[in-house]
Image (cartoon, rainbow, N blue to C red; front, side):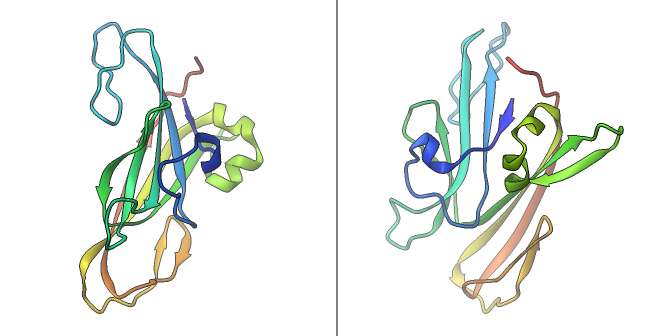
Length: 168
């Protein structure tokens, strides 16, 4: 099950960076012991686990690099990757007329019923170098124009995932 929530709802470790998205995944452990959470821990068969991914200002690094964080259930969040400038998410939602609509996190929040109709997720990340490189270009991240806020070299990554979205 896929969702996105207000950062305060999960009492995040570190502050979610303004202007970034988050995503919540709920998984249930399978009988073959092949389901793992984002920290690499096995999810026991039949047990439901919630994972939230978000970008936060660094709480551990004095250079204040942004970090991709993952929070599992009520455990403290942990760092998945550093030097993440931004994360944007678009959801593919089945249209009652048989097509597919692509919606941002804020559009999904306006109609929470759409989360039951997700057919795909597109996640995009912008990473940034640790050293200054004179890169001042603005960029587009899943149809959102973002201004470069520093002169670090940036790279863009995007992945599309089809979803078999089943309620628990």
